[in-house]
Length: 518
Image (cartoon, rainbow, N blue to C red; front, side):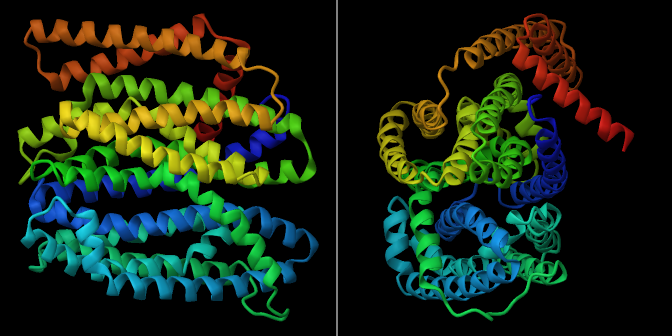
């Protein structure tokens, strides 16, 4: 992004703030997963909880991603004309969305048995009975979390990233407290942890906006056109969220047909695979969103092309070596994080195999975040809806095929294959919308990244095998092999770097220098 250094600097600072607090949140999330594994392992009750949580969790993620993505460019337009007008229209929207999520919560509460019958079709009768009870409690998350969706949108549009990323920390802290203090709640410790933590998160965002001078109030009358504009953008944006979030729920639903513990195994593996996405990739995509919206509004297409090009290269530069490390050391990572208490060695090995299958699609999963950001800013969201529906059908098809041969690993592999097909299609669509004549320079950088990845895998494998032959402990061999493999990756890139890779390396090293001085 050397063509627009000031823009790159602003995005870099925003990304740094997001990454720092996302890292804090994910460290807490890892702690929560470790305590969950110790207490519940891959038990039937945890399978039931994970499936029951997946429904309200997915509903909130779908609406949250779609509404925030649609709201940010609209709010920036309104605020450019008048801050008072923007806050007034937004307050009306907050009231309407609260009513909407209250109605959805009531409907889903009533139909909880039917929902469980549908998504838990592979469960035994006693599992379904417990699932209905948990579902009716967890359904309340739709109202609690939904009420704060536009709070997130306002914080995002105003680039108040500190408050936006401190808020979710309340959820993991509350869960850790409930898991640490054994109050005889059993699986309900997770239920009440989510409900209370999510309430605290929503209240914090509302108070933070008040302190940041957001003007709650409706001095202007309700404008139906503003509501219509929001939903015309938001409904197609559901497609992007289907790709990124709904497929996990599909995976868990279909895993109910497999042996007990399969749902929990998928969830553990996905959470570990999702860690670099949420800490780094989601941080970058959320940081660039308001900037992309401003570039679209100003008609600066050259800047948009550069952001897209460098976003792709950054994604490859960061996710490809992570995938290599997962392939080499997934079992060691899972044992380190989760093997304790009820989570035994067999559970660790199965989870590590699923993790490898998920990690093969890490780049493509990461790209869906960047892709949705661009299409939302360009207000070309119908294609997202169509592709989201296609991704669900593809995932179901590949799940049926792969789980027959590979069991629970096949479900994770299906997700990676689906993400790959959809992402490649989207890259060429976005190339057309941005007016990019060719991607040869970008592909040239990727050839070098793949070459470096091959060297990384080879180096890591040779060192691990050498240490196994000499009977040296993996506590020693794994860190040495991981470091040597990473240095090999960076060394090959440095030797064969392109101009675009050189720019990425320069930006990264300059950021590290700034953090070091800070």
